[in-house]
Each structure stands twice: as C-alpha cells, then as structure tokens.
Image (cartoon, rainbow, N blue to C red; front, side, top):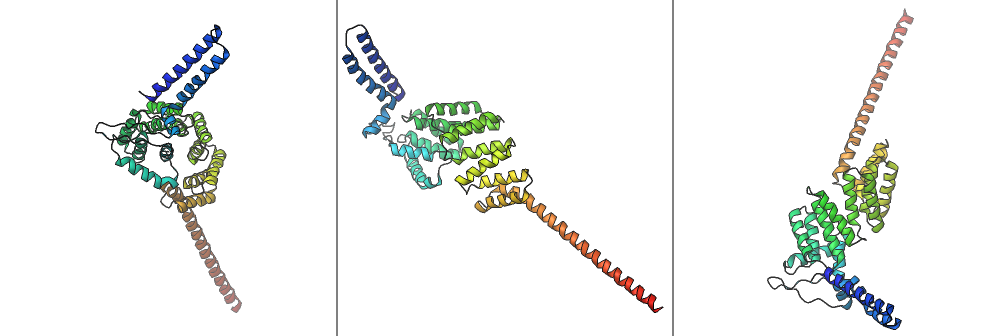
Length: 344
C-alpha cells in the first residue's frame, strides 16, 4: 500500500473517532471525560498521518523491512542524514564543498543494482545525467525514482522538479511547468522550482511573473546566489540598469568569485558609456575564470578600439612631428634668404 494511501486512511480513522465522541457527548451518552479520552488517540492518529510511516520509522530509529526486487536484491534504505545530503547534492548548483561527498554518494548509487536503489539514489543519478546533458538517461532515472513512491515528500518534490528541468529541454514546456508546480505543492519550502518557473517566464519576456518567481526563490533560499543572478539578468533585459547593478553587487558581496556577475557589471558599464570601468570588470571576470568566453568576447572589442585609438593618436603625433620639422625647415630657408639679402 502506498504511503499516501496509509496517511489518508489514518486521517479517516481519526476523523471518525472524533465525530463519534462528539455525537456521544451531544446525545448525552458520554461526558466530557470520555470525549477527552477519545481525543488523545485521535490526536495521535492525526500526528501519525502528518508524519507518515517513513518519518515515524526514522524517529523511532527503525529500518523498514527489506523490499526484495525481482532478483532478490535488498532495497537500500536511506537514513534521514543520507536523504538530507542527497537533497543538497541534487540542487541545480550544489555547494562546491560537497563535491567529494557527492561523488562518494553517486558512486554508491551507481554500484547498487536497480533492485537495490532508493528514490534518493535515482534522484542523484538523474541529476548527474541532467548535468551531463544525457537527458534520456536522466528521464529514465527520474521515472524509476517516482515509481518507488518516495515516502519523503522532499525527495518526491526534487524528483518532480528534476523531471521539469529535463522536459524543459524538449518541446513539452507546459508539462515541465506542471512539474514545477507539483514540486512546489509537495514541498512549499523548495526554492528551485520557483527559479525554474522564473527562467521560463523570462524566456517568454513575461518579466513581471519572472521577477516574482525569482524573488520567491530568494526568500526561500537567501544564501543561494543563482536566483539573485537570474533576477539581475531580468532587470538588465528590461534596461533597469540601476536595479541590475545593485543586484549584481549584492551577489559579489555574497560571492566575490562570481565571474558572471563581474562580466554583467561590465556590460552595464558599457551600456552607460563607462568603457574604462567596463574593461576593468571584464578583466576581473577573466582573472577569476580565464577561459570565460563571454567576458573574452566583451573585452576584445574594447581592446581593439583602445588599440585603434592609440594607433590614431600615434599617427596624429607623427603628423604633428612632421609638420614641426617642415616648419623648422621653412624657418631655416627663410633665415638663409634674409642672410643673402643682407650680403647684397
């Protein structure tokens, strides 16, 4: 039986118990003491329904009975700690500090057979395949994880969101958007679906909705610079340069090594005619990430223009020097002429 079905049945029992107690008191067949005695087990049932079987097993420190697959492999049971780590690693842009742990977790997931893998394993594998642009593999892993009916709603929400990001690469955008909304419904504190919705709205130039989604993503996960960056780019696209500059500077306060933000600041300076500051920002981006093609592309015309102006200045100075030499020569010739006239 699915965990969601168990939760519904638990709530139904609790509601029936409470209703029976109220009816007994109302008809005079029982007193308030009896109602209180009924309320306690009903409250416990409601609490159990909210937590769900998986969470209760985690709290009790018990592992569920092994779920053998078709070939007898025991399904891996992910602890609360493992699931939390899994969710961090499965972020669209996980913290670099967790790279080592992520690789270790991914290797363990890869080494388990399909019969042994947990929903969290499939989430990690789907995320890695998505990052590598192996979308068919990513899709297969997501569906495998969802088919296991994850007991942890957060894992299920992440799988739904990952499905949306995969479908976004295909001509099925409406389905992707539905996946983002389902992920939010499963886990209202999950920020990434809001970021993904913002990108979708921004792509269609619906900036009002895009900005709203990015701001909600920031509210839910203020330490994450990605929604800040996407919001700042949205402002830039709307030519709201002061707002965009403010956001990019906020990003650099949080992460001074964000070379993309330096590059975007350079583009803002360029739009407003501050070429020296633009060059400085592009150079800063390349200092952090020397191979960043966008900053290279932005800096190159500035350097070419600078070189052209320097060459033109040099040419003007040469022409002025030649003019001075000619003038000196003419002065000498005039002096000679005067000298000849005196001798006559």
